Image (cartoon, rainbow, N blue to C red; front, side):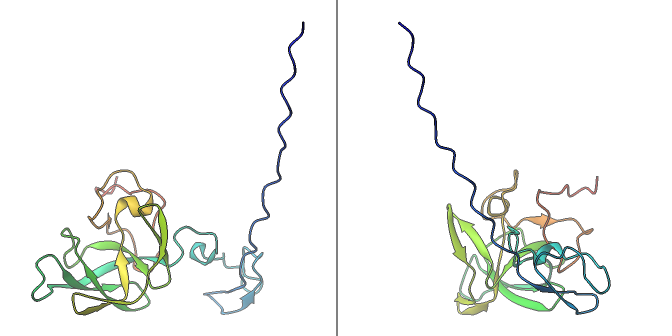
Length: 174
């Protein structure tokens, strides 16, 4: 007797991707449609951070411009971070943060992954101080190497306001 053929699996079509939002050119401020990858007026490329499907939407490279301990809180620091478009106050317990280091900030409204759950970053009072963002660690960014709770640091080649890299960069510049 012959073997019975296995039932055919039903193949479902992939869901339609969400349409990209319209965007304004940062070079000439001309409005563009979501499907445009270059500006219709000046032909500047659409910034990567403007893509709605970008996993790092709302994340910025920043430089810590000041760091001080929060009074009465052993592990908390209140830092000021220059993200290119301004300076944000952030409260962190990351012990590897000091003035002058480059970090990755999830700004208010960004979505972070916390223990497998998506959470929106909100302005909050932490240790009695206002915090308008959150420093990211390597696991939060999906990077290999680097521990949970330690801020992901970047080399000096990264500019405040830039989109973070997809993978952990080497700190030695090689």
